[in-house]
Length: 273
Image 1 (cartoon, rainbow, N blue to C red):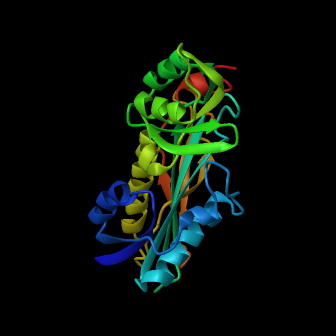
Image 2 (image 1 turned 30 degrees about the horizontal axis):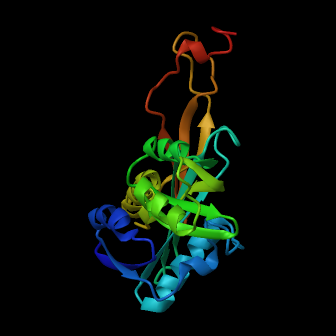
Image 3 (image 1 turned 45 degrees about the vertical axis):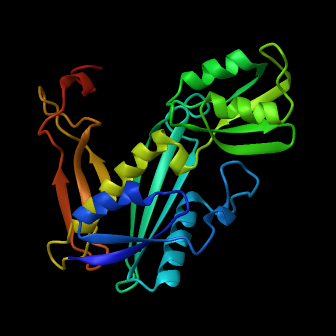
């Protein structure tokens, strides 16, 4: 199952996605003929009008139309939500594969916490300490008044920008507070890169997971059904008993059992009420 796919990106996602897809027989080609920033930016100067999933779909559709290749792939990341909204910085990465030949859409996702935070301060030493607490490859955005400078890596780049703006005094205090924010663009955010790679690995796995009846890709776990029996009394628990899998093409269904045959008694409402 060897084919070629187009990826629309301007933020160097090829190296993050291509290796996993190559293992699935998909050779990736990059196109940058469309400015994806026009669909919205993390900095907010261009508002996002589409949902993250619809944005990834639009990028995949554009990749198809711009290259004429049989498969288009779109990528989109978003921050927010997660298990502790407002308390934890949560990243969700989506990859959408559109197959022009079959009309099939495959969506892969990876998500998790990201330890990145902003800082508003007029203290240069505090800004330096904040940067040193993060990955040295992490990019930053500096907001001074109404201006925004993106793609700053390291404290020296920050001080150079602050000096050029006339904000640095003879002490470690600045002439005014500035806002330092993470630059979440993929090529400047190592934490995001981790989840993009995970999403690419899932997309590759979905692509090679063929329906046993018609060989259509993406024969994948769907609804999780609870009721795994307790190891002590066999009473149904809230743990997953099996996963429902259904082919998008022919409708063939299958149940994928949980990794274990029984659930711990600690999760049983009878043994551990």
